[in-house]
Amino acid sequence: MTESSTHVVVIPSYNTGPILRRTITEALAVWNPVWLFIDGSTDGAHEEFLKNPEQWPGLRVFVQKENAGKGATALLAAREAMNAGYTHMLLMDADGQHPTHQVAEFMAASVEAPDATIMGQPDFGPDAPMIRLAGRQLSIALTQVETLWGGIADPLYGFRVYPVRPLLDAFKQTTMGRRYDFDPAAAVRLFWAGVRPIKLKAAVRYVPKDEGGISHFHYLRDNLTMVCLHVRLLPEFLLKCFHIAQLKRRFRRTSAK
Image 1 (cartoon, one colour):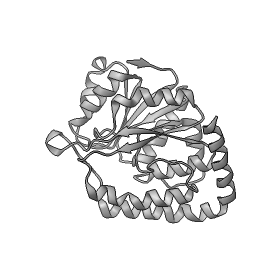
Image 2 (cartoon, rainbow, N blue to C red):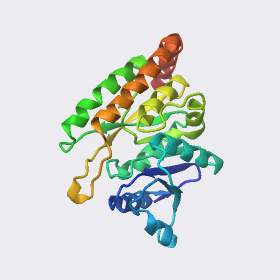
Image 3 (tube, helix red, strand yellow):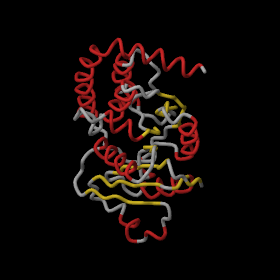
């Protein structure tokens, strides 16, 4: 298990159920510190961490009584991390989809390139629902346009290491990206802000229901949220085209060194 004074693992959770315990246990086995952000959960899955904190060394739990959404929670975590002296945070889901065994690999890549966002490039297995794979294609295509094919990984895959100050700065002037649309909004806005993306392959596992798997994904609602996000991003993109093209060339030169 690696201890760090600069990089923290952040896990937002909303009614994740029993699988939350497994995710936290696996994360603590590979990294310290781990921060759990409870985003208005009502299932009580986090109570054991509050009742017996001595059994969970390296874990800190933040509880929000009202559900604010993934994006708002991620930005709250970034502010808390910066205030505590951390420069980077690895954001991962609580539902078992993200590979805790790759946390150290992603953190090491961030230490090597602290100016970059380390983005998971998902490696889907046969358990991935086809409807989920098909639904993400529009957001992938639009994100490529909005960054002029500048090397963004799958914009919907949220296993990433963010530099916290640039992340907060990128969202200062906008109210978008506070809920399910946070991952693509962060990918695009950080690119526009001059934070280069570095892609690393990462495993994806869709945990079956009989093993505690849970999903709050709503096909129509969440895809409409994505469409609305890109409707707002595209006009900004048109105003920034020349700047984005310059960034793309700069990132390529940096990567080639």
